[in-house]
Length: 255
Image (cartoon, rainbow, N blue to C red; front, side, top):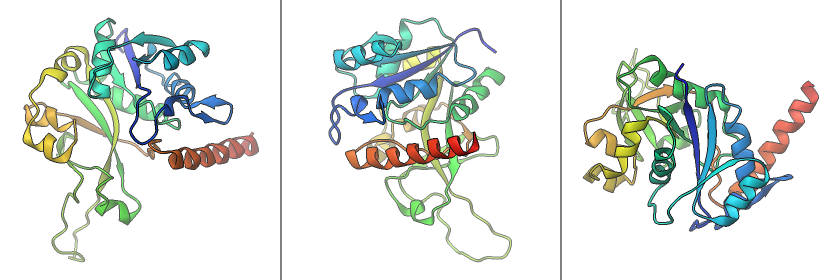
């Protein structure tokens, strides 16, 4: 295991659908505190930092003891913010964890880290999960991914991939997978990523991970059972709040 694996949680205040969501409360804690708490439980991370350009988020993060890295305010994506934060650190592997997933599974983070630890040639890894709800297969808000036999991504799309031309054919079974937006990078690759040319596929799909594929880099995709629950709207916050209450209630009963 490398000596230093850094977890970066990019967090911004401005959000078109839910401004200030990082500071919204779930129970007795803010959203960003829940995320930091869960990320810090990952076994392989040696350090976790919150990267933000907003003093309100920085103040809250420091209140609950998080390490904060202030970043520029003009970053177009969380990846750019994570790259700036990582440039000031000496970690070999950097994990970019979205700051709006308060139920993130620490074991999912570890599953995405392991391929880079075990195979030096891998520069980037992300996650996929089997789609259980058939409605998600055609939902353009659910990003699908297909991989080759090694587990490297062939493509990510908002469309249905693979397209099943003929259903019910004997001996043919098709499993669809959705992409879970957690990324692990080697340091040099992450620092160079914001400067890679943006191609037509990324522009069409509005999927930043396609930049790696369009520029000839492979993305390893590890499988997880983690069901992503991101908070994009106040309604999402209410939904996650109910899930959190249910999980805490179940933990108390089992205890």
